[in-house]
Image (cartoon, rainbow, N blue to C red; front, side, top):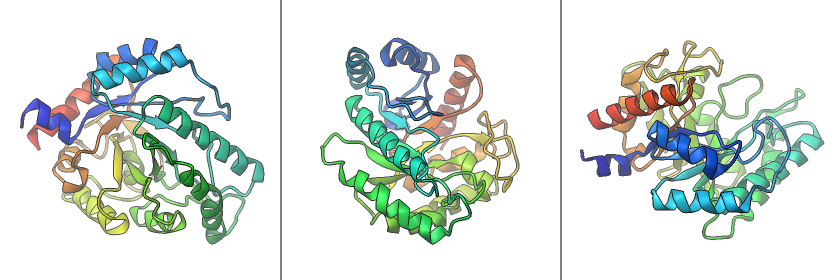
Length: 292
């Protein structure tokens, strides 16, 4: 497989730091790790602030990514939870996600990743999913521009009263959001493994991806967070390890590259380490891609 066709099948990159400027800080980091795709935060991931951003940095970043054929994805803040029993949290979730979607369009992002949340306060799961329908679906309805990003649902690692951690949980979530055409999925391999999908078992990755297609249909997988796991399968602990250094192991990622459902889907790492560690993980994934 040529370098060009390999990249076309699965661009490999990672989450990059942008504090100090999207273009000024983020682009050199992306180049240093050998990224073919990048993911960024456009706000404090652990806060509710909705900063406007720097228009000059936005334009420089967007132009450089277009020139270098570098796909961009935004990760929405972690606090967002449309299943919360607290009205203030849900209101803030709406504004925070709306901000990420708007900023995503401004910087040319293909998708915005959001965690699927949990039913807090002991509330009924059905009630929480009804609230997802009521408050999240209208945000999808606001995506009317051709260059608006897709909304990519990321199942969590199964902690607490998670609304979506198993692949099968995406079915009710898609139903609640009426299978909106702008709706997609971001799979985190560590989350899936932590929730109980045994990706390390022979054929485990294929089994999970087959199920994904069965549950949400073809063409809904928009991004993969490629992370190994420091903990065993089913531990419900979201602790990322470097590729091949955790309990999932390198072979599972090779299997991922061979599945039809991942055709054209980018992979971003969220693994430990600075530039050198991230460059090693990106390089390892490229090696596995080449051998697929």
